[in-house]
Image (cartoon, rainbow, N blue to C red; front, side, top):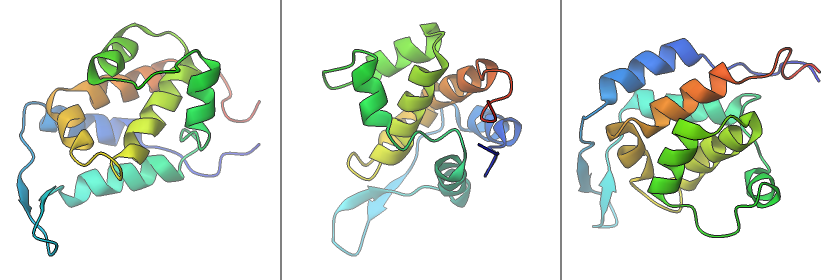
Length: 135
């Protein structure tokens, strides 16, 4: 497999460092419901990750194979981001977070505000196997 799309960890680490502790504003959409008002950089981060070789399109299956059968909580994600040494689990959790904003609005807001997404992506980068994805 050749690298199709890279993910610029350094660029996004700086962005996520700047976002630590910053509350994402919410505003009323055309449907008269409240939605997070993400800046263009957060949207670009998500698009870049989803288009990269780091995004696990089969994250649900990967997590099931790794023993995750229950709903994964924010505390679970924090623990995995801080303690897991398994690249594939970290990659699947990052993919779950990026993808599931569609089902759980505000997930990115919580994960950026408390630094979990920054920690998680740093661990993915640090634990990327030599030669990935060309092995």
